[in-house]
Length: 188
Image (cartoon, rainbow, N blue to C red):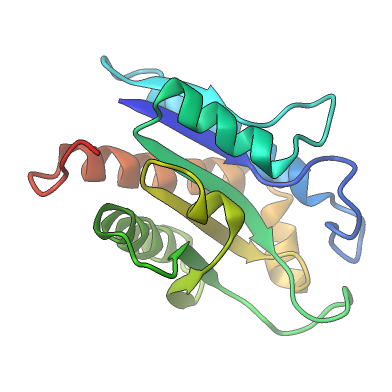
């Protein structure tokens, strides 16, 4: 199984910061790295990254890389935000699939959503649909997971915590492995 992990955005992406200055990419990158460490322990699993620590990789390049290697799954990891960038009460976990609700992506999104909500204890905002480019143009099942709100003071503290980052990686990894072993999963 070829797994493409996407640490959404980049260090230089404008506006992708918590009110106290944590860059979203810092969180996304750490969760992707911890996920790779966990997934690398399994035979038959190859893990790739779309992102780079030296440039903010454009979406078309991220998608192109996943499509070029024939990825079996694409997971875009994010921290959410709400409002004008100041602290607010929006909270919880949510996972997105494309508006066409591809069957395999929806199954993976449901697995990630329920596992993340259960393991983190944060409110379950559910699986939602969106027409995000990474969901629309990636040829394999693709999901985007929002692991908490950078604009919520309590969740921002979690997002900055190494333990929480490892917990999110464990939840994502567990979900991918369960999905990959599902009898309903059919090679795309």
